[in-house]
Amino acid sequence: MKKLVFISVLSLCTLNLAHANGEATYKQVCLACHGAGVAGAPKVGDKAKWAPLIKEGQATLTAHGYVGVRGMPPKGGKPDLTLAQFADAVVYMANQSGGTWKSPDEKLMHAIHEEVEKRKKQLAKK
Ligand code: HEC
Image (cartoon, rainbow, N blue to C red; front, side, top):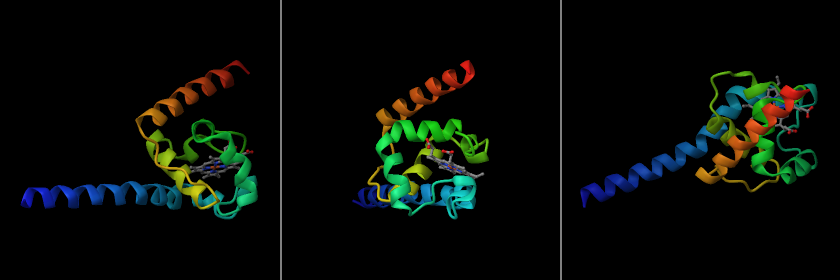
């Protein structure tokens, strides 16, 4: 019985952490530009700006942001940021701006990863 309680407390913590991480990463790394809309960054909370981005789909948008696009530095300018951390920050940003995205499951992470590789190849050709 004790063990069961322990496990359920543990899984609650993990859920909270997963959610808090996207927000924490956003505040540490992305807020500087996306909070105020620096250099044309889509401002978090600006639903009109985010609607077409959200429409691109979670895999595509996350991958393109991770690789970098115009004023958006790869990995938000933090080279040690993992794809999973970046993806959760994107979820947080999208959901503050009209989206209903979830932290990616394994299948979606795989799709994001494939899109990252595709994007890198495209950019290398230019
Ligand atoms: C140095 C400023 C800067 C930082 C830091 C930054 N961004 Fe951006 N971001 C931009 C700009 C500028 C754009 C708009 C690029 C464009 O479309 O021209 C952008 C666009 C994006 C997009 C849309 C990409 C697309 O395909 O249009 C996503 C998603 C994104 N950022 C996520 C993030 C996340 C997540 C972080 C933090 C981990 C982050 N950004 C940190 C400047 C920044």
